[in-house]
Length: 273
Image 1 (cartoon, helix red, strand yellow):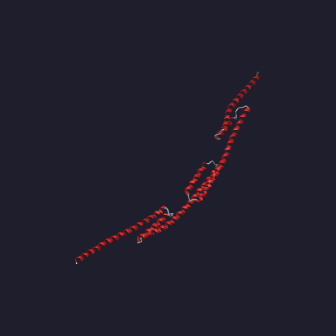
Image 2 (cartoon, one colour):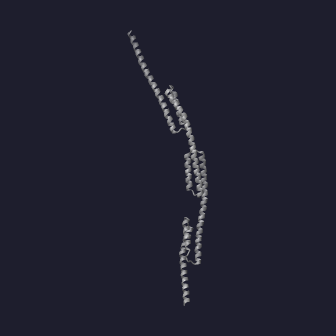
Image 3 (tube, helix red, strand yellow):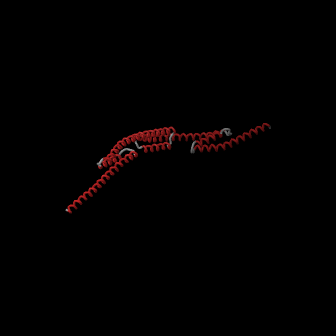
């Protein structure tokens, strides 16, 4: 009787264990099927991968029939393999796209750097480099390639600033040299406007220097400084000529009055005699 009870207990335990294993299989199969579906249609890789790891952890300390464990675990490993395959494919596509984008951006950069070395259109060159920066920021590139391209753009900006400073310094020096010459001539014209009686020549000199100043490379503040001096010379020669004309006309009127009186007096004496 005791032996029969032991056998009966063993059979009951086996049955319970079997039923538990079937129940665990049913529950775990749902999870494995879900993991397999996510691995076949991944929108991204991190979330499905984390879910697969969670499902894999469920196998530990879970009672299953051997054939069920092997079936489910095999299907789970296939899901892992799919995600690895998708990830590898995307990595290869990304690398390929990165190389293609790198080639295109290298071409744009080479052209921009050549322009930086030759052109004086600094505003246009700056806008072009800013545009290339945006292209690099938005392009599909590996971190190493992006860093390399950004370094080249920064080098191009540095080159642009150095050339811009050099060109501006040269322009400033050229403008200063021209200013010195025009200032000397303007002072001489102003002196002649105050002293010379040849008003036509003074006016001709004023028109000549005004035309030359318009075509010069001087800066605005330098032009304004000289323009004021030239305007003073112009007004001076006009005022002098007007004053001279007024003096002449006054003297002529006075002479007319004096001579008319003499003539009138002479006629009166002649009539009396």
